[in-house]
Amino acid sequence: MYGLRQAPRAWNVRLDKSLKKLKFRRCASEQAVYIRGEGKNAIILGVYVDDLVVTGADPAGINEFKKQITSEFEMSDLGLLSYYLGIEVSQYKDFTTVKQTCYAKKILDQFGMGQCNATKFPMDPGARLHIDKGGQPVDATQYKKVIGSLRYLLHTRPDLAYSVGIASRFMEKPTVLHMNAVK
Image (cartoon, rainbow, N blue to C red; front, top):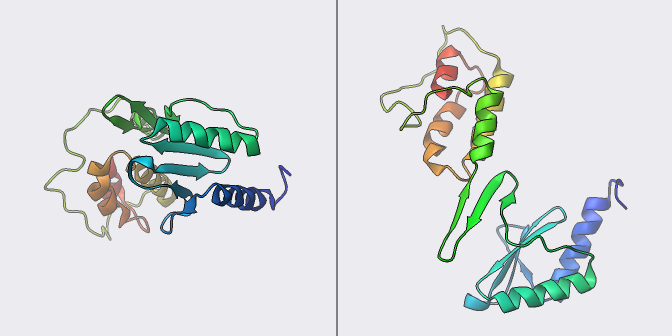
């Protein structure tokens, strides 16, 4: 079925049917998340194309699910999650951290800022961005690429959300003023 236009939908329908048979229910607000059980016995399953991320407080319940799902599909267990969709995950006994260090460095290199100086504040606190009608325009496509890259970085850097949100307002006609603020 790989390569056919209907393959992704067919796979999703089959996986959905199998998970519901295993008593999982689809999350109402996020269609790619399934839940089985309550409280400490809950198992949460995230689906991205043909990858599954399984989490829960009960290791025995997770192992039982793995046996159930491998009896239905050919799968491999890659162990603890360490890297997923550009997000680096470190799991410890009492906590888990997520970061996008490699992705952030890639963004800096991609936009010619690999050797930039670090700053404590994502945006100059006194900066007031406005529509710069008389300013020198910059390539809007490039500006949108920078903003889009930064928006993905917000998954692990919510401290940047305000600054990126302000810069996003000027994607239609960005100028040097706006690009400097983004940098």
